[in-house]
Length: 418
Image (cartoon, rainbow, N blue to C red; front, side):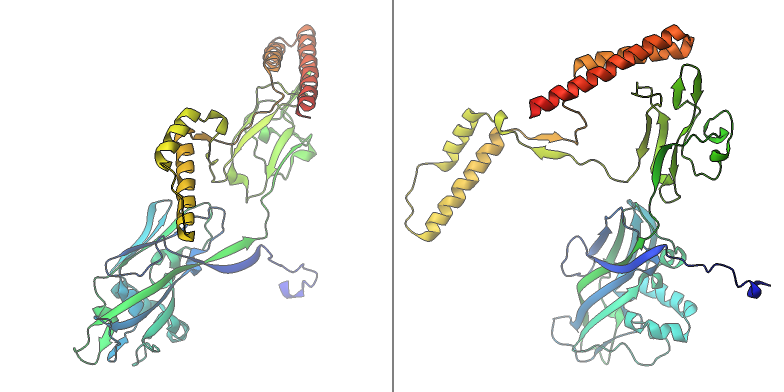
C-alpha cells in the first residue's frame, strides 16, 4: 500500500521562485471621462505574466453632475462594472476576448459563479450579492480592486502563464453613471470620477533555467542523423535537424555534435543547420536562430566629420542675428537659451543622421582572408565528392594557409590598434 512506502522521496516543487504584482498604467494617465477609451499595455515580452490572477484597480470619487458634493447617492452592487460599456483583451494586436454591457453581463455571471463565502472575499471589488446594503464609501471617495476573472471569461478559463506576447487591456467608459448609482430621490444627478486606473498583473519568477548546450558528445543515434546508436545516445532532448555530417575527416563522416535544451528553451531555437563554411577544425560550424522576441534596435547618430561647415555657418548666422548686449539675468538666460538652440539646430541641419544596427565585422578581416576561405571551401567540397587522398591533402594545405593568415592578420590588427 502507498501509505507504507516510507522510503518514497517527498515531492518538492520549487519551479516558481517568486510571485509579485506590478502596476501597469495607461498610455495617457489622466482622468477617465465619459465615452473615453483607455488602453493599458504590457510590453515586457520577457516577463512571465499570469493574467488569470490580474486585477483592475480603480480609484476616484462620486459627486453630483455639477461636481457638488453628493449627499443622496450611493454605489450599487457590482457598481464598478456598470461604469464600462466595453472591455477588450488583446495579445499582439489580436482580439482575444471582449465583453459589452459589462455590468449586466458580469452581474448575471457572478450570481451563478460565486457562493456566499467567495462573495465575502470580493467585497473590495464592489460585489455585495446577498446584502441589502450598498457599497460603503468614505467622504464620497472609493477604491476598488476587481479581479478580471469577474468580468471576462478568458481570465477565468485560461490559468497558464503568458510570455513573449504584448498584452493590452482596453476599457471604454459608459456615457453616464445612472446604472451604477442609487439615489434617494431625483434631486441629485450622479457623476463618478475615475482618477486612477491600474492593471495589477502578477509577474512570476521561474526557477527553472533556460538551458541551451552545444557539445561534441560522441553520442551516436539515428534520431539526429548518425548511422549507428551507442549508449551515449539515449535520454537526451536534441534540437539537431537533418543528417548532414558535423564531423568530417577523409575516412569518416558522422553526426556527433549535438545541441541540447530543456523544455523551457527548445521553442526558442529555429532553423538549426550545419554551415557550409570552412572551419578551423574537423568539426563543422553549427548555426541556428534564437527567437527571443526582440529585434536589434537601430541607433541614430551624427558624425561631426561629415558636417557641411559652410551650411552650418549660414544657418547659424541667420538664426543668431546681430548681437545684443543683455543687461539683466533673465536677458542673459534668454540669450544663452537662444544661442544654444541656434547652434543645435544648425548642427542638425548640416550634419546628416545615420542609422546603424549592431555591427558584427572584425577589424582583422581582409580581402586576402576572403580569397583563402573561398579556396578552402572549394577544395573541401571537391574532397567530399571525390574522397581521394590527393584532394584531402590539397584541402588540408589550404586550411593550414587559411589558419596561418588569420593568426598573422589578428596580430597585425592588434599592433595597429596599440
